[in-house]
Length: 140
Image (tube, rainbow, N blue to C red; front, side, top):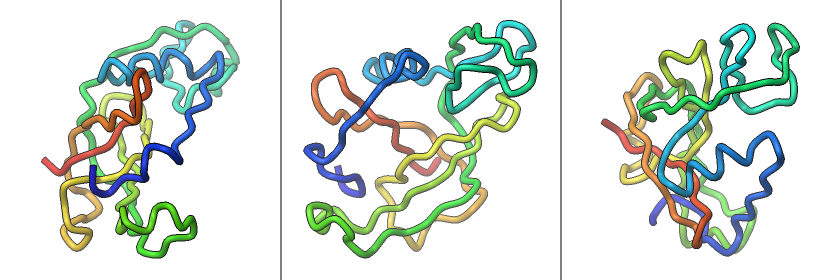
């Protein structure tokens, strides 16, 4: 997939707090943790809720539609192995209905000059290897 790093340099390292997220991405689903005590979404996943300090969460499915909050275009290969995949458009995407949760992912299938803050995007999936998938975004 153009606009993403080569699979051999991507190393996912799930923790007890992020494992449900990564399991869902492997199934091409986006889930976000929401505190079962106060209802606040907490993304990225953390051991304690920032609002009420509770630890329990429920994983809520999200459709993956969002808006580009910020982005940068990466044109210089700091890591030589990514040179052939450049340029990357790395974006911070705000997910509506989540109290301001934002997800970082590459915007693919578009020339960098076409990307703007405020553009609507939809989630897509980059299957890195069997059982490991990372979210990417496409303009809507």
